[in-house]
Amino acid sequence: MNSLFDLLLNLLRIKKGICIFFTVTLLNSLTITLKLNAFNPFDNTITGVDANNIPFTIKLDDIISINFLIGPCKSCNILAYVTNIDSNNVSVIDTATNTVNTTIPVGIRPRGIAFTPDGTRAYVVNTISNNVSVIDTATNTVSTTIPVGIIPESIAITPDGTRAYVVSLISNDVSVINTTTNTVSTTIPVGLAPQGIAITPDGTRAYVANTNSANVSVIDTTTNTVSTTIPAGTGPLAIAITPDGTRVYVTNTTSNNVSVIDTATNTVSTTIPVGLAPQGIAITPDGTRAYVTNSDSANVSVINTTTNTVSTIIPVGIRPRGIAFTPDGTRAYVANTSSNNVSVINTTTNTVSTTIPVGTGPEGIAIGNIC
Image (cartoon, rainbow, N blue to C red):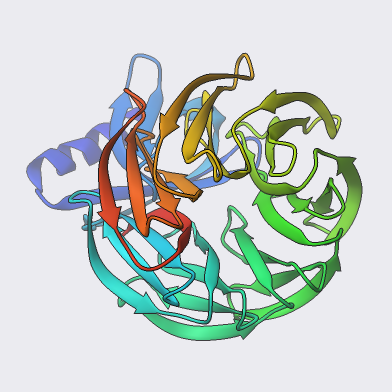
């Protein structure tokens, strides 16, 4: 196999504009598709990047099967899609220039948004339309609309891209969308006034923040049933999960803190005080920090996930809500609902490097590698 990699890499050196993509199945049955970057003959590892430009290093001994595809390199852009709840559209930000390059009309009062793992589609939750707009990211147009529950709030997509889970505030349930047919395959009852949702990296569980129940429902995504319920703080709102899947961070908007759930035991291991009315939360790709938007404090609390303490506070715009990171983790984009703009945080210095005007009432934000 070593000579094969040498041959492939030599081809890359000779043929400019040609890329090699490989799909491997590992000993743990996980299948990954990557663009080949390098082969290290000294430790028998291959290095590549996934669709979000996140690097992976794989040992040859861990590979069960491997398939190669040689073709032209795709031209990709890291784009931030921002839902504007009062202008009923989505602003598309090119993160290379930090400018809005297009605006996409969607449903009434769009809030949550998520990309499929391959970046080809963005799913937008429209709270008053009670549906989900599916955006084709190649054309930035809505390809279809999917009816869901009453007052849908947020959305999460499984790591394999086959299902989207949408929480609905008034119907107290989660709609499961089959992303192949773009139809709802089942509906799962949860707690009262669910608002936030996140799915574990292995795709086996979805965690739902039930604001009025002050708890978190854990959904087994194999059976699509609630396996357990975890008490949290007052007014749990948004959820983020560490990249290794060991911890779930939940913002409690009324008690002004963050609950940390141990996924091995599904119990709260600690509670972290943050700012006033914490809303959104996102964890850096390396898992070392969690960034929390504090709506009434107009700032972002940065949590060190090793010590679970706030290491710094970053002033941003008025009523910050949604937050997302670029794939390399060097920047965080914060939607400021009442400022009608997005703050861009340099995560090395934890300062705002620029501010981008968007639509009216920006709330949700997702960042993807769009090719």
